Amino acid sequence: MRHVSAVVLGLLLVSTASTFAAEVTGVLVDEACYIKEKAAGTNSQLKGEDVACAQSCAKSGNSVALVTEKGDVYQVMAMGALAGEKNAKLVPHMTHKVVLTGDVVDGKDGKKMIHATALKMVK
Image (tube, rainbow, N blue to C red; front, side, top):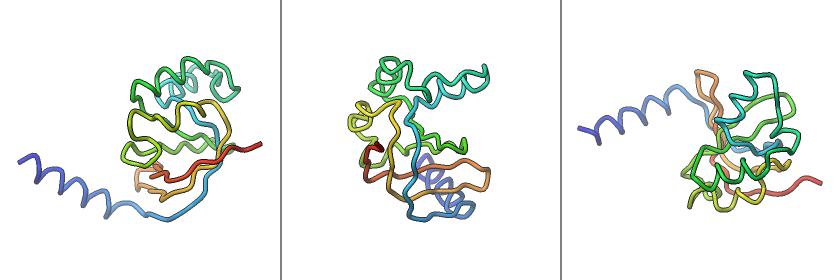
């Protein structure tokens, strides 16, 4: 029954979302902390503060997000090449401005996700 539910959920996501290849520039943050900070009116991760906390959360396997200058938030999909093994390839870049390359899923509900396959630092 779980397998059927997963298939149905997958089909629903595909039918309600558009997917396209893109390069997205922004700051890598711990998604949960960023949402809390945004609600509180602080953005310490975007300013490059709380590096150790962001890295610790990413090492624990928490969701990592990319926040653009416009304020768009892209969840880095866990099944992507960069987010595997508890974000091992993302951890050193937390709170840094980077460019992620990959397939972007722009869901009907407004949630954006990226299946990131490459990362490069922005100078």
